[in-house]
Amino acid sequence: MSQQVGVIKRINGSLVVAEGLRGARTGDAVYIGELKLIGEVVRISGDLVALQCYEDTSGLRPGEPVIGTGAPLMAELGPGLIGEIFDGLERSEIELWKLTGPFIRRGVRLAPLRRDRRWRFEPRAKPGDEVEEGDVIGVVQESSVVEHRILVPVGLQGVIESIEEGSFTVDDTVAVLVTPDGGRVPLKLIQYWPVRVPRPYRERVPIDRPLITGQRVIDTFFPVAKGGTAAIPGGFGSGKTITLQQIAKWSDADIVIYVGCGERGNEMADILTHFPELEDPRTGKKLIERAIFIANVSNLPVAAREASVYMGVTIAEYFRDQGYDVAVIIDSTSRWAEALRDISGRLEEIPAEEGYPAYLGERIAELYERAGRVVTLGRDKRIGSVTIMGAVSPPGGDFSEPVTSTTMRFVGALWALDTELAYRRHFPAINWLRSFTRYVEVLEEFWVKLDPQWKTYRERALAILEEASRLEEIARVIGEKALPNDQRLILLTAEIIREGFLVQNAYHKVDTYCPPERQVKLLKVMIGFHDLASELVKLGVPVDRIRSLRSVMELLRLKEKEGLEEMDAAYERVREDLERLRMEYEAAGVMRGT
Image (cartoon, rainbow, N blue to C red):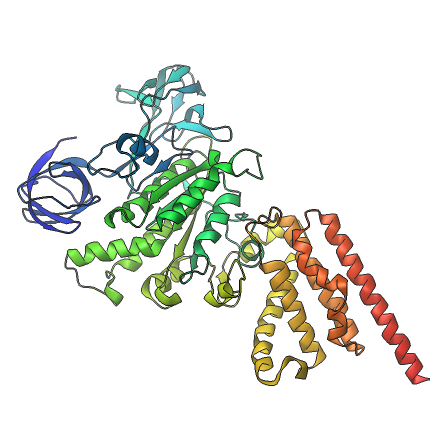
C-alpha cells in the first residue's frame, strides 16, 4: 500500500486535523505523530483531513507527521484468535502486558496474531483441484473444540498448484493458487478484512433454531434465534452485565465473542478470571476454548470503543463463514453510541436528540443488520450464523432515550431489565410485561418436539403473570384477602412462576443453567398445579388451605432439582395432596348436606 505523509494542524481531544495528506480516503487508517498513534480518516475537506485517534492524544503537537497507510482499519483473521483477549484494535492484551506492564504505553504496535507460533495444517484440497472463494483448503485444530477451517480468500478462484501438510506460522505459504489469468497467489493461514465492511455470503436462510442460553425467562418466554438480534436495556444495578455473562457462559453457540465496550474494568476482569475455570455443558471442556474477548474498558480512549464493536462482529463473520454459529455479546452499545456522539461533537456536526448524531439510527441498524443465518461462500454450502446481543444503558433506566428507543426498532427480542425487580433480588430482573420477542412462531417447531403443548404453557403462564400484575394493583388498595378465591389463586400461581421459574441463581451449580427439556417440564408442572387447584377453588376450598400444603411450596425449589423424574415425582405429590384436599371438602359438603 502506498503511504501518504501530512502534518498535524489542529488537535481537539481525540480529533486531529491534518493537512497535506493527499490521496487519503475516508476510513483509511493512519499513524499520528512521532509516537505513531493509530487513527482513522473520518472527514476530508479540501486539503484538511479530520482524523479520529484511537489512543490518548496528550502531548501531540501541531507540525508532527501523519502517515497514511492507504488501507482501512483491518482485522487479522486466522489461527490464534480463540481464547485470546484483544483490545478494540485487536492488539493482544496478554502480549501487551508482557511488553509494557499493566499500564499500556501509547503507540505500541503489536501484530494481533502471534508470528512465532506454529500450527499443524492438514490439507483438505489437493493439487489440481479447482477452488473458489470460501472453499476450505485445509484445517488447523485451534483448540480441543474448535477446528479452524482455512478458506480461500474472498475474490480469489483458480486451481491449486501445490499444497503442503505440516507445521506453519500464520505468515508461511501453505498452498499456491493459479488464477484464471495465470497469476500465482500464495495462500497463507492468515487473512485480512476491513472491519467496517460486512463479509459477503451466498444467501440468507430462514432463522428457525433457538439460541439456547440456559436462562428460563429468555429461552421459554422471550427466545432469540440463531442469527437473530436482541437488546437488553436496563438502568444501573439492574444486572445487565451478569445476565450477558450468563449467556456468554452457557449459550449453545459454537463460538462466543464478548465485547466489553466501555464497561468498568472490574467487571471485565471478573469474566476474564472466571471464564477459564468454567466447564462447557456441551463438551465437558473449558469454555475458554470456544471464546474470544475484546476488552475496551471505560478508562481506555473513547474513540476506540467504536472500532471494538466492528472488530468483534468482523471476527464473528469470519467464523460464520467457516460454518459456525457465533454469538456476539456487546456490553454495552450505549458506550459505543457515546463514542459516536463524542466524535460527532468534535466534528461540529449538527446534533440530534440529546446530542447524538442524526445518523445514530443508521449506525445502529447497520450494526444489527450484520447478524443473520446464511449460506456461506464456497462449493460445500456451509450454513453459519451470527447472533448479536447488545446491552443498552439508558440513564436512569429511561427507555425513551435515543439509544434504547432506536435499538428497539431494529432488534428481534427485547429483554427489558427492571430496577425494581433487581432491588427485590429477582434475577434475571427481566420484566415480563415490557419485554418482547418476534421469534416465537419460527422457533415453535423446536419446542413442540419437547412437548406439543409448549406454546400453550407459555401463553398461559404469561397470561397469569399479566393478570397477576393487574390484581396486585387492586390488592394494594383493598388488600389481598378481600379478593375472590379464584383471583387469589392467580396471585399464588404467579408467585410460584416468578419465584420457581423466572428467578434463577447464577451461582447455584444446578440452577445456573437449565436445559430446554427441564424448562418445559418445570413450566408444565406449574400450569398443571394451577389447573388442579382451580378445580378445588370451584368447590370452595380456600386458597390459604392450598398454599399451606408443603408439596405446593416445594414447587418453589423444584428448579434446583436436576433430574426430570424428580419433577414428575413432585407433581405427583402435589396432585395427591390436592386430591386428598378435594375429597376432604367433598366429604365435609356431604355431611353438611345430610
